[in-house]
Length: 261
Image (cartoon, rainbow, N blue to C red; front, side, top):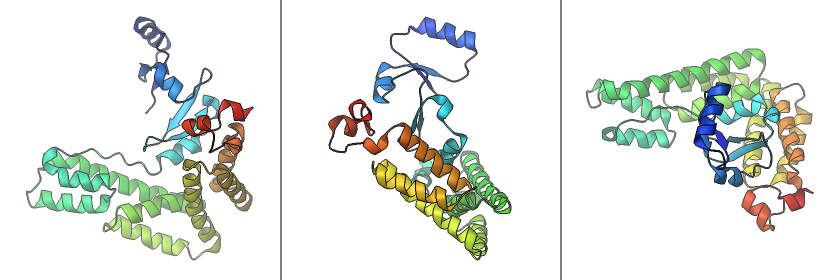
């Protein structure tokens, strides 16, 4: 979802006129506090926020790569929530136990314990997500993109455990892992996830070294592309100069203006 943010100094009528003139389709908020909170220093400026509310990337919009957006959506599953009378299934969805939620919900509908009218959309969304992960994983396997194979099929295997699609994903992964090259790339997916956690914990030096190693080891792959983009972001934002003992750096979660200079 795209949301534009304008300074509080801009009036509502002025922004409405601007939106109409430019044909903007996405919502625009008037919120000066948001601009300050995200450390916006120039216009235009973009912020990529993950499904967990954490900032993944900031900078000029032209610098945001499609692969970064794709990576941020890898673990996002858009599942319609259920009404309050089916709260126990919502708890499973929040815990990302999608396979159990799907199987239990289908069983409840079959036994007339849950109305089809209320559960149908959620069941359909879960089925769509399973089929999408499996199809994209199989397609990536044929293209030699084992990064996507690992991301998609491991997610399907873990989050949709108990389903036929999950079993298929496990079988494909077992077959793919027989090839050393593919196995190395599948392992690199786990390394990328660890490096993401390092970035989140502000261990930028560790992350930088890890991305450098992966980019060198897997030339010509999506793994190299993702690693190179992270390296560029770390260098551009001077994150290696981040000081965990600096109150300003710690507050912003990135290198403050003083240590960027």
